[in-house]
Length: 150
Image (cartoon, rainbow, N blue to C red; front, top):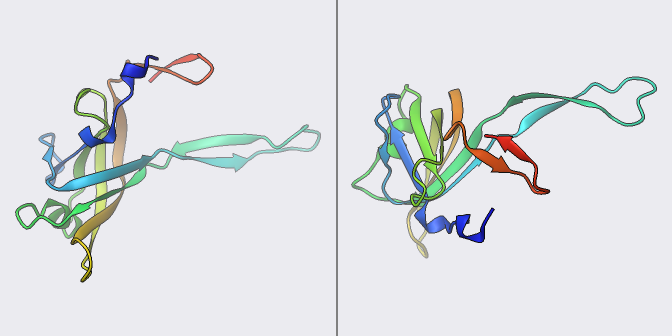
């Protein structure tokens, strides 16, 4: 992997389709997102095993969103107060717009107003259906050089 494949976070993007459809559009004034694909580890250690042994469960897709209040775009709050799982599309860098994480998500939202700061918004999301990493056929290089299909 070349150093030129690395990206600055300033080109990240959060897009949503509040109807749960396939037409995701950028959400204004968000400036941070995180995503976790942690898997449940179940201890399956037996007598005479030389160390603990684990079975791996399903990915627990969840994450966070953050940004600044924008009265012109209330999408985050409309989705949080609605009853439909939104399509969420998270792009690490718009310089590589086909590399992204996407799926249906239940989203909540919060607003933080302080006398000495900007009005900020935040939210959490959890999977409401299958999530994918695109492009599906991309090759990822692990540290140590081994290659896996993404």
